[in-house]
Length: 504
Ligand code: AHR
Image 1 (cartoon, rainbow, N blue to C red):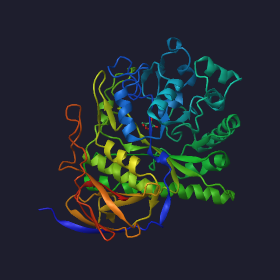
Image 2: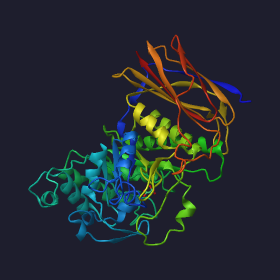
Image 3: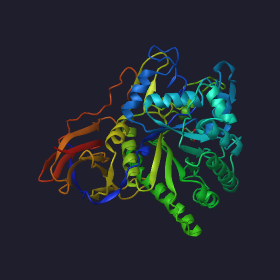
Image 4: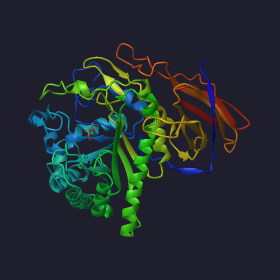
């Protein structure tokens, strides 16, 4: 018999952490594996549009409601010549792609990606190459994309058939430049100087753009902390955000420890905020640097398969993690953790969007389907817009291999004042016990339950596949009820819950 424990939460509508910046529901498309070729673009596919973009994939992306997509990399960008990807397609060079050991055909480049982004209703977060290239290529790309006309690069764009500027607002100054695997990896001092000068000239071309400087590739990097401090010392007044990248895995098959890794993300975010504010204090600056978690996800299932990829393949099956139920629970918990930091975390990109460590999978010349992690992302992206309300939580605690005092209940709420809606996201990560959840929402007068969505399974390893795409999917038969402003609900052991309320 499943036992129950009790968890309580209090929400006060006046106790707001911050308005959510919707860009925390961003994602990422890199020229890697089948993200572009076979993912968003497959000209021969039966459901492709006149430009070769897969309409079935676009439909799924629209369900995720993704406001911004980072492009074109990732490690790829550190060897990329953006000029290879513009102009007549038949003249574009095929190149050795050194980050992932493949061949890049350059069939898709900046303009096609911008066209695709408009079709799916998202903005582009463009990364520039600060590996093999630098300030000159970066400023030219800004001019090509954003300058109206009458200059060499803007007129080149117009001659390529794009009369209006793309007006790309958000730009990344390279990718993971702290990582020894990066093409033309740099020390913090080298990168800091290059990023500062590149930022200066990019903003001279278009002062309206916002810039993300590279933080650490993970908290395990030996340079973590000092890297952020040094890079910000050099770039502080020229940039707007610093990046964080974080991937999780459960190679040890220890579910309790795995689901506690939200605490690791929490610690990572807090440490980067502290480092930003340390540099702010040293510089006596009035400016605050915010955070861009522009790569995050689960990534480990495909590690072995990727060792067998044939060198110099074109669009191989690479980084194709098949996500299971416990991965979806962790992704939900990570999204809650991000919302807790909505005052400083302004952008985040689920890495990635299609086929490559992605919520959406496709078969070449075939179907597309939703992975398990699709659902928590879709829920939070659609219902997590508004003000984050700071919860007061009392929950049973447990210890795991790497963490102590892990609350069984991970939860947050978002209030949408325009629509008079309140949504509670709640993860019960207890392996054995249900939670009798009680939540005081008396300050939200007149609110009633709309639905209680639940994602649950009795198999943490359950997956969705082409042949069984609905094996793991949510239902809305949760039992949440509200009496006199107090919500009562049963949160099943190992379950993701979305309790939606509105004023009728
Ligand atoms: O998202 C896959 C890769 O992970 C990216 O190319 C790189 O930035 C990170 O290491």
